Amino acid sequence: MTNQVTNTPVFRDLQADDPDPETTEISSLCFNCGQDGVTKLLLTKIPFYKEIILMSFECDHCGFKNNEVQSGDKIQEKGALIHCSISSLKDLNRQVIKSDYATVKIPEIDFEIPPQSKRGEITTVEGILNRCIAGLEQDQPVRKALDPDSAEKIDAFIQVLIETKTLKKPFTIVIDDPSGNSYVENVNAPLVDPALTTTYYERNKEQDHLVGIYEEELNEIKEELKEIKEEDEGEEDDKNIALADEVLHFGTNCPSCNAPCETNMKVTNIPYFKEVIIMATNCESCGLRTNEVKSGAGIADKGVRITLRITDPIDLSRDVLKSETCSMSIPELDFEVGAGTLGGKFTTLEGLLGAMKDQLTGHNPLVCGDSVTDTVKERMKVFNDKLDDIISGKVMGNRIILDDPAGNSYLQNVYAPESDPEMEIVYYERTFDHNEELGLNDMKLENYSEDN
Image (tube, rainbow, N blue to C red; front, side, top):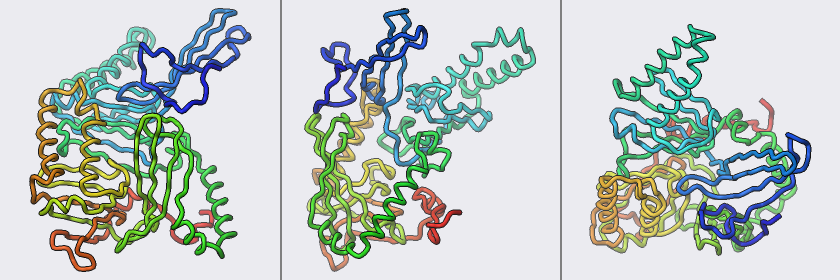
């Protein structure tokens, strides 16, 4: 075995001149001749796409060879449902990332591509239609000889797909991905795209099984946690006091390069707000530094919408807690980012705006890479200039709106405990859709330990 345990990224960038690709060799049984062959594994990354595992088998005895590629993607906490209206050639050229688990539908023509019918891919909306047309045409000569009626119906449907591709009528493409790893390009980035909506949902039991998560294992963990809670119930208060003064350390993998690193976790109390859990990761391999914040008090009874008008550069130094369920918008820039875009963060308003800019530009090649059109680049430059003016304090009067249905976001009131004249906080009742996204509609609140 040539791969050694080192403090280097597990999934490395794919480079032709890499002097040490760190392959792993494993002795494997050859299914062709029954002798021992060699399987080589290479963990790498396709630029701007995802992590993959390349496997190559070769048998020296019979000469049999086989190659295979498997996804190394992480399964997201929630599934993603993407709706995109296609009405122009620009829409047909939208870039699409489709994972192995994604189902693609076009409701107007009652068309569906089931999950795992092909490997995950990077393509465009037009590319999806072209692949479907080519796949249906592939076996038509044989089909016409064996089953002329079916072949005629398929020819008719191929014509429907061709008409759809030529935009005789607008249509909608729907991507339902339980793994949460699919994506459709926002052609108006960084502005809101009215033709594109993405919602995140809690997976059901069948979707968990599809992505390899099984409820039985979760139930076992819940039972273990329940037993621990019952044993330690009398000492819970003392433990909470000790935990509040202690920084916990645990090993994990870097979210950027997947190298082993350490995450620090601490429970803290934000004045005039609530208890939160702060987690910070520092990777020595790639230099990535991240911090993530989660509520220590669960989901609040009501959602919260916080609006701050920036009237002084000192406003940018306000502490802000943005939970992973919170969306953020700047109406003066016609800009909005959905929940989960930046994850949970505890920083200053300046730091939050800077992280948002990095997410949009430096970490998003689909809006600033080599394949982006000059129009998008110019639009991004104009937006970045306006955002830089806000971050530097040159332009005042812009509003920052934090909308969190879970009620776990916070913006510092510098006049506390008095009211802040430049900040408005509104608590509201969640809608059915809000509760659906938070997984509350199907939650059993009474007799939860009993079987249904």
